[in-house]
Amino acid sequence: MADVQDYKQVRRYETFSYLPPMSAEQIRAQIQYIVSQGWNPAVEHVEPNRSFTHYWYMWKLPMFGERSVDTILAELEACHREYPGHLVKLIGYDNYTQSQGLAFVVYRGS
Image 1 (tube, rainbow, N blue to C red):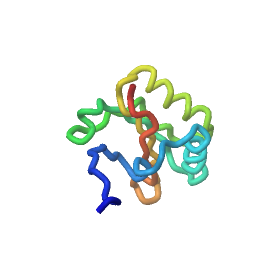
Image 2 (image 1 turned 90 degrees about the vertical axis):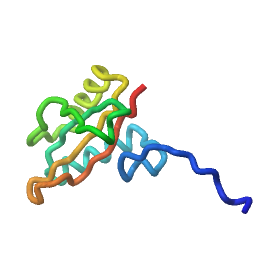
Image 3 (image 1 turned 90 degrees about the horizontal axis):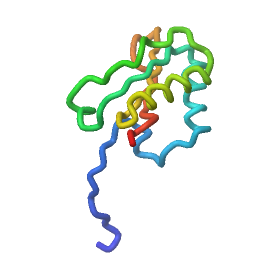
């Protein structure tokens, strides 16, 4: 029984939250994947204590047709600067399936 670990309650927001935190290069690669798939990126944010019980707030409108990774990163950073204590999530909307193709939390608040 020595190999059994204590249970630590940690909130998991999406698949990537089970992995170590992403580096700036890995976040950039995920954004590039969204762009390469032709998906429309969107930024959402919410207070950490409301993340499971309320809808997330949309930061501006989705960036329809945006192809610049730097522009998407700039919007993520602007949202984080405006709401430093909030969780900030990036979503890639797939027009064909009319669903989210990818979504992950970029900033976990301060």
